[in-house]
Image 1 (cartoon, helix red, strand yellow):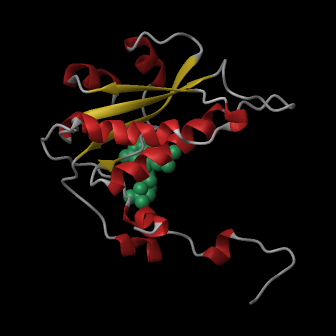
Image 2 (image 1 turned 90 degrees about the horizontal axis):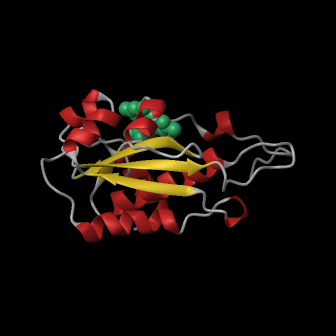
Length: 174
Ligand SMILES: Cc1cc2nc3c(=O)[nH]c(=O)nc-3n(C[C@H](O)[C@H](O)[C@H](O)COP(=O)(O)O)c2cc1C
């Protein structure tokens, strides 16, 4: 599959089949995070795979359990390992975002659905998982066999057109 086709096929899935994910499929998705680029190749990520439903209910918004989500990957950023620019900007969030995006695409390729979650209680999540201070839970990634889906054609209307988001310097018309 062409990569752009895969990108259009990926969508946020918020309902899952009540079905466990095979270990090799989870490993495939996690491998996609492992090979992600990061600032200075510092790889400041820690991925926690939660399949325990009671634990999952404590760290994720209520809809995640209600959606029959079989697993959630907690994507954590290590602020001690992350590269900081000369002006002090910590690149942890950027690195984690790339790794998570890699995972969403790898999952879509093998028929799994995912949904980025940043609207969660990160402090509570860190406490429940007993994370050291340097590790920040940046995103939750529910993952499972989809019970809902979206049309790959949705981007024609669901996304801003290129003219609104791209500036050419100098202007280019052909
Ligand atoms: C950084 C980020 C944070 C997001 N946080 C949430 C969230 O907390 N809850 C949720 O249901 N969806 C969340 N989403 C999913 C977006 O709503 C979704 O990607 C967007 O509406 C486009 O839809 P699509 O992913 O199906 O193409 C998030 C997406 C991104 C990239």
